Length: 435
Ligand code: SAH
Ligand code: SF4
Ligand code: F3S
Image 1 (cartoon, rainbow, N blue to C red):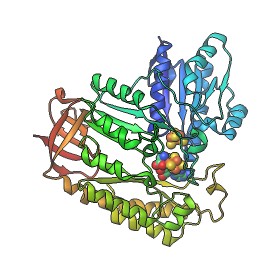
Image 2: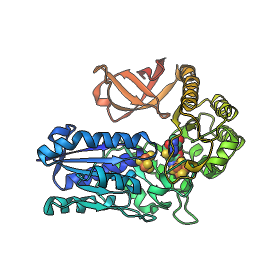
Image 3: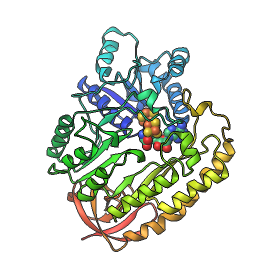
């Protein structure tokens, strides 16, 4: 049997696309392996949200060139990065041995393109620069048996000034409710317990004036068998009261709300084109907390955006202190060709960016253990994912708020949701006993 591997380099949406690519590769008779050396097909599903992604791709392509020469392995590069003109130029000039280049708008044609390469031994460059379509009915090979991601909307219209995503993913478009609900219904029948709804701006989901994100959430909650619902990423400006109400009324919806902050400074937020201020953000957090007392928050933060002063950065630290985030995903600002921020003056020195990053990280790290204390003595519902990596006798799973919890138990519990009392915290995981 012919073997393939996929290197998935981006976000959840990118991971979800990889599952579709895998579905198509397997339909053509390829079997998955992790060993590059035995591959007949190597696929890179790329990301371009930050600079290091490019270095990684081109580094890897350099490494596998000799595998291709030895075995005749088919090399395919797809995903967000290939939607950028300068990347296509670079592939043409320095990496023209790549057999297939496809983009976010031609993901659906991967199978057809691959067939052409196998049958005609030709190279295919299949990139479209369009607003984008909605793909339905593509095969999908899911990585997980109990947790599944379901895309509900594609693209982004927000054009945050630092971000490349709107340029490579096209305009916002929502899937029809009946297709989403059918997909989740089918997943429930297959035994899936947890669903993560995906979209670059998930709460601007819109299937007509009378059917928005909150309506969809409420309908998904009615599906028997699905016990936990997450969604990423909402935009604070679109976090409407009906969504808060839906979370409040449905225990199935996770009490961990991801609410990307990006910066705590109103000046920087304006330059970022985020459309809210520091005060708006804090007021939203307060409003959600009032309605849903057991809610916790995670966030994304960028440090070193152009013209960020020490005072602006202090505002970011201030919000981190005030909100007490459960998880903080921190990024150093990275210039992206074609974005508004790339053309801004006052780009910040690398060493200042790194110094601020370290300070933010230290602040967050210093709070993790303290934050974990609130779980001790409580009973949490844990979706059991498997045995612990370090200890076969222990099981591991995740709580509603996405905490890793390790505990003793029989392997029959894998795939089930069980009550576990938390007895210890170990910074990056909690320890518990089955109730
Ligand atoms: N649509 C989602 C995810 C966007 S990409 C959202 O709006 O939350 C994921 C994260 O990458 C962003 O939230 C942001 O924090 C970070 N990011 C995006 N562009 C970046 C850039 N140019 N430099 C550094 N971090 C960036
Ligand atoms: Fe990028 Fe902003 Fe759209 Fe998120 S909302 S994908 S950060 S432009
Ligand atoms: Fe995701 Fe990276 Fe594309 S973050 S949307 S894979 S640019």
